[in-house]
Length: 237
Image (cartoon, rainbow, N blue to C red; front, side, top):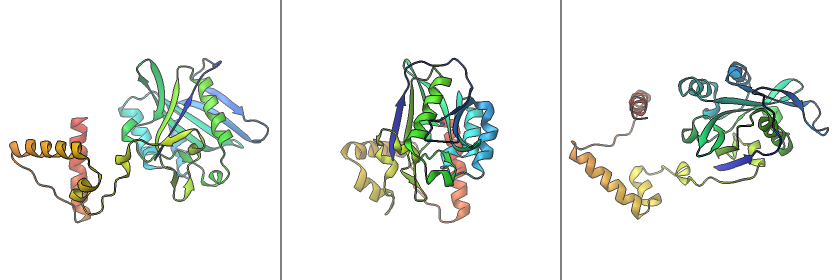
């Protein structure tokens, strides 16, 4: 996993929507458009033939925008009038700053923005930077674009966002090896402090009636456990 960032500065426009802008002469036929959540239907249509990670799927994006009431912004790179790359982002506050990030925040892992598979073979950093520049002009309130927990590649195709300044994601828990079960995971990846916290949590569970750890063995069991998890997650978060 890697994290990429882009800061915005300089002159900016006031409009929420930016008309398509041509890229430099060495990118003939390319333009960029920026729109708000009203363009989500077009995003869903583009995804029918695009490559994307689960957290950039239309189902994820549409539901997050609707139920989280996110401040949505869509930046789309077009080639000959047809979309080839689209960033669906939400704008949030972090202290005094406004940050555009993948929808879902920490819930969005293994991110890979929707892209035309054929365009990905010739994608380059200049086109990505031009798209971010258009986003800066269209949304002057955004101080930073933070694209965290990126997949370096998907199905063997390199993530074009890695062409931006980036660094390995500090959240290594997203890459743990589950081989051998939970006990083996604790013995490999957990430090003394984490094991102590795990023992404390186990004692608390014992105090309210014990617990047991089960593992789904069939598709029906997996669906039942996932349904229970989603119900608890909705209640808890």
